[in-house]
Figure 1 (cartoon, rainbow, N blue to C red):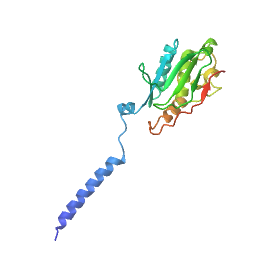
Figure 2: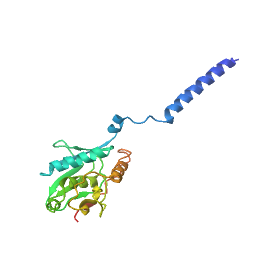
Figure 3: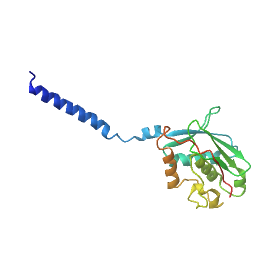
Figure 4: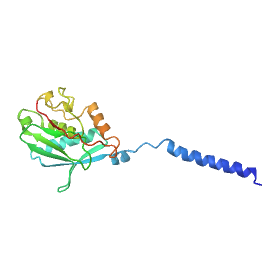
Length: 192
């Protein structure tokens, strides 16, 4: 016959083990800044065919990288594949509507026709990159909306996404690679 103290001791040990195991799954620890940065989706861009736009592209990329946390744009090393191809053209700016995935493909055309009419190069670059990140145009719209594009007028130089635009991009890339929807694929031309 077994001693009843053994059952009590074994029962207490089992309860402690179950409580410990349950507690470890009940509430995951919040992600640290380093873990969040590591979880960001990285998209590479190639601007080697965008002569004359380098500083505007760098400023547009910096604006997106400063304002969204779960997707980062980085310049592709020469000879490596890039998800976003950026080229300079003589027409109106246009871009493939994303959100582009890692390994996917989107094209951004930075058109000099918009610059000739007085539109800000950095705003154009940031706006077209916004399309690659999944944002459609919001025309007509005020200067405070980056995606209002040319409808905000030639005096508008705002290259910073507003809260709604940031939120939409954050939402598109929120769950990392596994849940990222493929790019829309439509080309949006930003003529007035």
